[in-house]
Image (cartoon, rainbow, N blue to C red; front, side, top):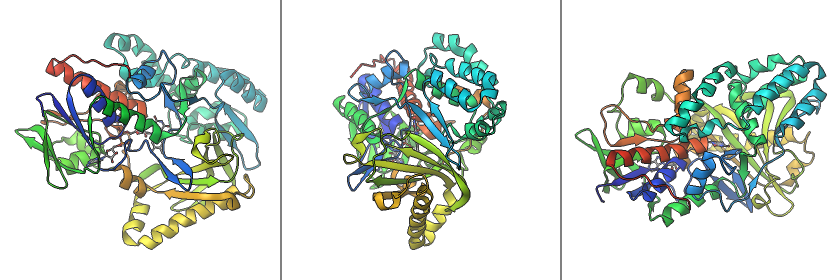
Length: 493
Ligand SMILES: Cc1cc2nc3c(=O)[nH]c(=O)nc-3n(C[C@H](O)[C@H](O)[C@H](O)COP(=O)(O)OP(=O)(O)OC[C@H]3O[C@@H](n4cnc5c(N)ncnc54)[C@H](O)[C@@H]3O)c2cc1C
């Protein structure tokens, strides 16, 4: 390889992005991916004529004029895709069927909330006003701001600390009991998430900057993979990197599991951060801070169970997502649930045979629960998966009568499934304070103490969702180009 060569471990969105920008700037890059598909977590899988999507609920940067849109144009991810802008973000239904439609049109949402809770008119007005503040501001594009633009935006970013209350605490501003109960669940049912994350999302949905690409997550990843290949990049599938090669505290290449060696000037890992630091580098490069942040992955697998059903049922008139409160709590796998979080894909006809639809339920779970089952007793693991699907169908019958008889395909993915297919079954608790957390929005690639020519990117190295990981790849190549005195030359596809 040439002097300006880069090896990238993993063809997740961060790795693909880094590869594309490397090629655009005349660097010589290679990606090594253990699987035979691009995208990592940004994926989907087929079952009996249905496509079960594993990722995108919302994609940031769907509106021309926004920085993330330009990045997707450079990566060839959007221009030929149809983007859908569903009219609701989600719909919460209580155990008696009373519904809160979280419309993405803020005027409509304001009116609907006032119909539900006239006594909360002024709290609703303040909530809508705060959300309107994000119709021209996308926090996720912070990673792409130039130094000057970032300095200009800093005051508004610092003001976010005032909107840092968790969703469940913000809900106390409403007096209406139904709104108080429903509100904490409307942002992916993450009651502890700071309210500004939700305001940013709903404001950008209203602005039609956040949408969903037709065809699902794998097609989105494949579009970037194709861009990489068109740029002359070399993508090696079925290639498990088992070691990062280091000489004199400099990364110099990688060793694959079949013992073949590949050399390069710079090595980038888009893999799970724990794997990178403790397996591929043997834990030799780190300090106490790194150990605190990365040595103990969280056992709480958020959205760790994904149960997908291919249904002989038309869901095109249903909302795109739902939170369904149950008449009484039900035990599913390791946890008791008083509500279910549904995604309904009736809005995308490419994912199912004509007239049919896909419905998915996401559940939080413990990684260790599934790991113990999988490695101790595989039969029990499979039985537990089947029991999860059966329990869910029983619960869904009330809202979707006859659903059980309409199932044509089903799939239960656990944290172990995700780990086997993407290398990521766990995440990390955010141990960073507000300001450190906010600084991650700038999308810096991570480095390790004393190790030169080596970088970590991707979700577990601080990339915020799909756009954050892609922006990290872009930022990294710009930095490498600066260091090598090579022009950084992004181009539109
Ligand atoms: C259920 C779910 C829903 C989500 N919804 C959204 C959403 O709506 N919007 C959004 O923006 N984001 C969403 N995300 C987050 C988003 O999917 C991730 O942030 C992003 O895809 C992570 O990309 P990455 O660059 O970290 O790579 P990863 O996806 O982590 O991929 C890493 C790749 O590296 C490969 N690899 C690992 N180790 C090795 C090795 N040793 N050798 C070779 N290859 C290796 C893996 O096989 C994998 O392909 C969601 C995530 C999940 C799980």
